[in-house]
Length: 273
Ligand code: NI
Image (cartoon, rainbow, N blue to C red; front, side):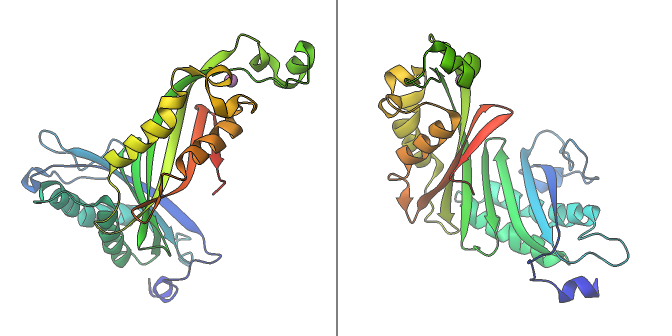
């Protein structure tokens, strides 16, 4: 304990451990039922609660006795003890809480209760909406929000004949095309105060600038960006980024990157983080 405290604050060349804690938070804490951090997300509630996931990344030297950066049940215990009341307060407070500010408060509470340094804390509000904060940029958070669109395309090089295209692109070169259900994650840097852009504003920009152009379209035939650009996953990710960057360029919300999944096993990040 003493040793790791000495190294607190150092993150270079030290191992890290990431733990996900799932929880259901009742609006009324009297309904909270204590229990272990089960796979399904204890503490359970009597009745229903709001479901959250918190990712905590701990860095620090390995404990000489255990070989741990931090003992996972201690992480669970501290996160539940500190974060559940803060989340309940945020849910029932008089004004809507800024998610980035809340993440900063959660980070401070968890970091000060563990021996290791917590250099990342992510709050997942749904499987498709996350706010995370990473050292040393503790005055900003990353808002990551997912969208979906369906589109068809073919992959062909106009300089090649059918046989040549098949040799390069396989069945993706079929001249009548094929379709995918894409997922798009947009990552925006937001300030950790009340002046962060709100999610409705982000949704509107993504809908107007990307989804309305790509969703239920044939990329090669209907979308100007792909008239002369092969709509590979890599080019789709770069195009989504460039469709958004001029419109997400304010202190309240600045585009940091996108990730596009073509299938659940294949995705592309642009730019590479
Ligand atoms: Ni395809």
